Length: 120
Length: 107
Image (tube, rainbow over all chains, first blue to last red; front, side, top):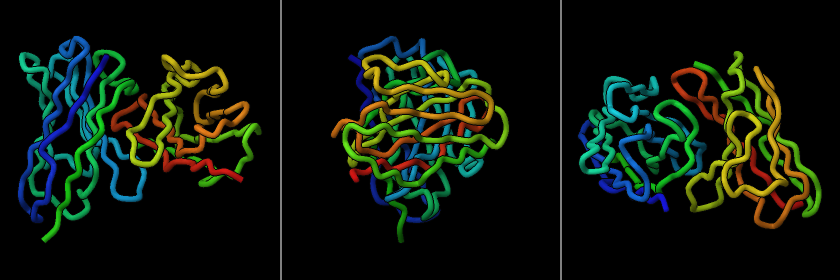
């Protein structure tokens, strides 16, 4: 069965950086697009970024464009989110999610999330 | 950016009753609309994609309809496990966007 396990969350000061990872198993990772979706405490879902199956296409939410970078290593079945210049409003649970197809579709499997807290 | 608006924000329903949740897009998204269910402390779960196709393992009491700018998720007879928050998401245009959610609570 599909498993997505996020890691790398924690407490970080505003302006600092953090890298999240998502270890994937149970499916052919290199055939599917992947997404990061976040949820601030007590709030709704916010799509953050997506990457195509081969890493050649990427898209970002306006709120993170220029600060966050999504990437993947298909040899390690791992998805990443490099987060720079973090802001208090980036505080959220970050979910890794699998696309239903190669890129840009709905997400049919989700990890349990990792909490990022940006605070001084 | 396509803005997705869900209504109502909260829906109070008795077990066994029917629930209809609405999702409206600021511009047409074709049929590229998904519905997700989220329970407290859990990750979202895909219910419906392509506006009306049930995801694997989703019970037949969940159905989706609509296209363009108006969409509906219908739960035909609410079970205790269906009380949760429901989100719509468009994936027709970048950036992908979610609605604000509808909380379905026990009446």
